[in-house]
Amino acid sequence: MNFTKTDGEFFERFNYFAFEEVAKDESIKIDENIRYIAVLSALMGCGGVDAFKEMLIRALKDGFPPEAVKEIVYQATDYLGYGKMLPFLYAANEVISDLGIKMPDDNRGVTTMENRLEMGAAAQAEIFGEHMRKAWKQGIINRFLAANCFGDYYTRKGLDLSQREIATFCFLMAQGGCEPQLTAHAKGNMNIGNDKELLLKIVLNCLPYVGYPRSLNAIKCVNDAAES
Image 1 (cartoon, rainbow, N blue to C red):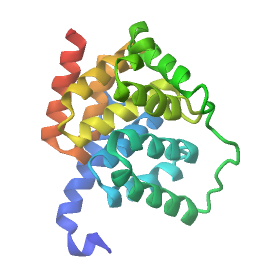
Image 2: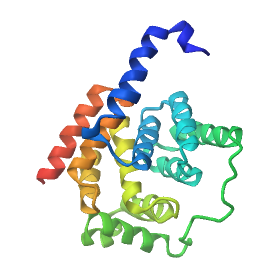
Image 3: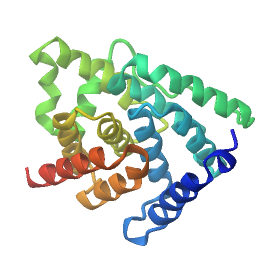
């Protein structure tokens, strides 16, 4: 649909705000790949499939790696659930195919069924502290978190731990209702080098896509994490 004909006045203001006022503001400017990780993850978190496709086309044409796109989508399974992730997998595959992009043939998984728990716990410890290395023993959901969320996804190639924590932060921010987890992952981000200033810039870069209420909640979570 040609929105410039049906909704031109709205899109004049939205496009200016999102792509000029926000994206080009020097005070909140971030690395372009980080911005795409953040915005694509936030659009997944809020269920914005159509907007995700629009942004994905921009990202891929700007040189954002297609394998990174797939890693963001796969990782969303543990934070949004398969039910909310699946439409985005279809969308990503459709856009990548339509643009004639060939995905790399190499596998990006590095764990086995035998070591996924151990390696997942190691990833948790690197992000949240050494006490997390044995946290999986505290209950079945803790074991699932270590083996599945961190062992199956965080250990994969295509995104590093720092980038994965940004994606998770944005899934949680945009999803809403996850403020305890958002605060914890804001702290996890800070632990591995994504400092308070960067996180606040990420929130503001995502604001056009997730709205003011969730952005304001995220800012509070970042501030709370920085003080803890």
